[in-house]
Image 1 (cartoon, rainbow, N blue to C red):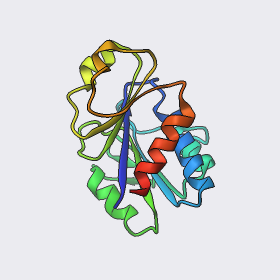
Image 2: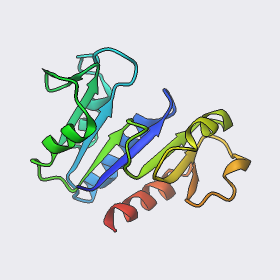
Image 3: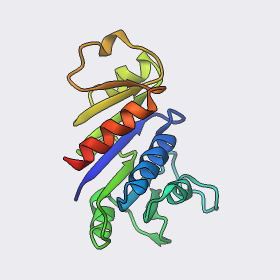
Length: 165
């Protein structure tokens, strides 16, 4: 299964990035699924205006959110990402974008607002790109692409090229 992660801290722009990536992929005819980790403790909100509904509105054909042991299919169980991906393997998807689950081992796009965020996240495994809110000297010689949050066309094209590989 072709799985990608988007990670960063709360309000860093993860959902917005996933939304844009899904929309771009759907426009190109890809079937995309998304999985969101509700990392704020407890069950995810069960309302129409949540992040997974934003993923769906952008064009994802399968969306879910997990938090506090509830996978928002209304099945209470201590879900792991591999279990959720197993369910998704039954759906004909071209790729899956996972929002969150920082410590899983899939290719990661890390979103950082500042140097403090980067200091906390730079040790994650399988980082393939970083998107920053501001220029960071510590990323000048990074072994992967570093994009400005404002360079949307550039990083979305890079992401789609990577998915195609």
